[in-house]
Image (cartoon, rainbow, N blue to C red; front, top):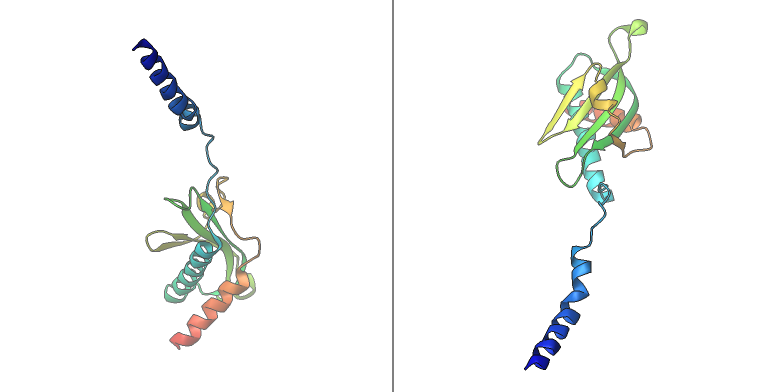
Length: 151
């Protein structure tokens, strides 16, 4: 009988003893997930359309030009991360004395857009910039196409 318990104990140890370290080993934290290409394209299109629509519907100031437009995110994009599009625009009003303004369009359950110095939204060191190219011409084209549709 004693031999049976020893054999049974060895079988249990052999079956589970090796698996326990794998199951309970400390896991290294995974890096913040980056958006997939398809998910990012959806967010990019949403932000470009939202910003262009907002500029069209809530003017003045109406943008003549854009510069340094880029998209980034803060936090985990698969959970509650916040996407934002930041850039500058030169208003049509003011002629030669017009000054560049800053804007940020933030993806929320819908979107929010702020015009003016938005250093807290666009200068946060935790922002991971998802675009390497300047989206200024893309935003201007989107705004122009919306303007033509509304006329």
